[in-house]
Structure formats: C-alpha cells, structure tokens
Image 1 (tube, rainbow, N blue to C red):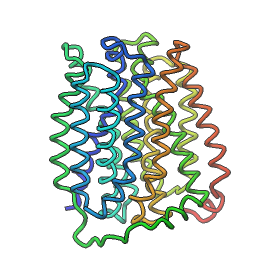
Image 2: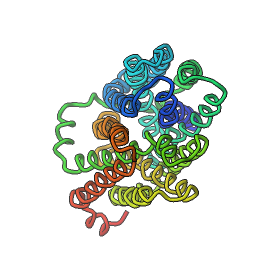
Image 3: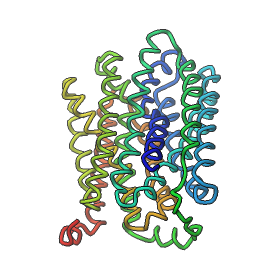
Image 4: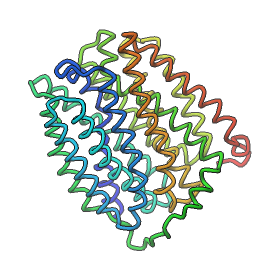
Length: 389
C-alpha cells in the first residue's frame, strides 16, 4: 500500500512541479504579447508566493478533513487557474489571476499533502522518502519543458499550451488525488495550538532555517525563472535553453534525493554545506562558461536549489516532531515564497535595465554568502560534530 501512496505522491509532485519550466514561456510571452521581462517574472514569483502561503491553511485542513479532499481541491483550482490563463488573450491581469493566484493556491494544496503523507507512511526513512517525493516536483520541469518547445515550434501559442495543461494535468491530478490516504493505524494528532507556533518562532534555529531556505531558493529561482532568456541573451538557440532547463531540473531531482539521504546523516551541517555549494556554482555561472560546462553548472545550481526542499522538511520533522510538520514547515516555507516574489523579479528587473544577467547573478551570490555567515553563527554545528550523526 505505501508503495502505491509513494507513487501517487511522486506523480502529483511532478505535475505541479512543471512550474519550474516557466522560463520556456518567457520569450514567447514577450514577443507575442509584449509583456516586459519583469512582468513575466512577477507572474512566476506570484505563483511561488501564493502556493507557499496557502500551504499553511492546507496543512491545517489536512488532519481535519483528510488528504483526499485537500488534494482534490488543489487539483481543481490548478486546472481552473490555467483555464483562466488560456482565455486571457495574453493580458497581464488575467494571467496573474489565473496562474499566479488560482493555480498558485491549487499548487499549495497539492504540494503539502504528498510531503506530509511520506512522513507518516515512512517514519523510518523520512529523509529518503521526502527526497523522492520532492524529487518528483523537481522533475516536473523536465517533462513540461521538453513538451513545450516542440509545441511552440509547431505553431502552438502559449495560451494553447495553457489550455492543454488545464485539461491534461488537471485530470491527472484529480486521478492521483483519489488514491491518497493516511495509514490505517494512523491516529490524528490534536489540533495545533498557537503556543506551538509561539515556541517555534522564538527558537533561533527556526529563523536560521527560514533565512537559509530564503537565500538558497532566491538564487535558484532567479536562475531558473530567467534561464531561457539568459541563454538566449548569450547567443544560444531555444533548443539549447531547453537542454539547460533539463540539466537544472535533473540536478533538482537528484539533489533532492541525495540531500535527503545526506540530511539523515549530517543533520544541521547539511544546511551550511548546501549553501556553500550554491555560492561556488554561482561564481562559475557569472564567468559564462562554454556550453558543456554551463550544463554542468546548471545541474549543480539545480542540485543546490533542490536541497532546500528536503533539508528543511527533514530538519523540522526531526527537531519539532513529524506530527507538527504540516503546520510548522509551511511557516519556514514562506521563506521560499518570499524568495519567489523577489528572486525572479529582481533578475528580470535588472535585465530590463542593464541588458545583462551578470548583475542579477552577482546579487544572488551576495544573498547566499550573507546567509552562510548567519547560518554558521546561528547553528551549534560544533556540538553536532562532537555528538556525531
């Protein structure tokens, strides 16, 4: 049974994870519908922010009504959102409502259910199971980006593709939602009391996790949100941009699974190591390496970015208890939502004014390095090293 639950959870995450293929839509949105770069990134950032914000009520509802109703609600909102975008005629406001708000809410409801279920179905291997589930989220961009570019070359418009996403992905999400449930022996924990939140937000480690996930995802979202136009600005063909997105997404998938395994052994040390890895690869990205090396850099940026989605979920479950994961993790995950609003938009805004992405990547590097310094001082890593994993 739990193998079927895990499979359904991975499929759901892959469907909603197609949002990381967003940069594939950026050039045609600019060329066909005259949207500015910052507007395309504001759409993407709003989707990220709304989805992370609505994980909080979704997590609170999960234990009250069960995983199936929460996931079904998310599936329907996701589908309706893309349907609204498909009928937008390329206008910014309907696109914002459809993709940023409605699909964002749907993504948040769908995301929290598989993540929480893997913690209760696999209490002995939370890190590995969480890595596999969130790895599906990262892999969704590979699937969608490899489908979108050929459709664009065959004459499909972006709005046609949004309509297809609403229909095909909507039906897929509804189908897998029907198979999600708690273990038969699972007993619902008592409702989360406000004093649990108060204790958590007074804990220094809680805020270290918040800042760390913000900085790691700020850099990753800035890169993936602008990756296709970035490569085109460097003279690469659209097909090469798709390959680069796939490399980022592959790193995202493998990084989530690998860091899930590593976090079970390294504990809070994984936080610092993942941020240092992001800083190093951003330096190489600024240097604009040749294409083969660029693919390796995109892969490693994706791996460092993907680590954020398993490290902090595992650490919250370990520090505060798995039964508090649906309620406390979304609070930390708001750091990702804030990064979604600021990272892609900052990259697009800086490009509109400088016609160069190096300044934006340099900003991401500064944010990550500042977080490394804060994290090293905020976590008692020496005690962990002495205690061992």
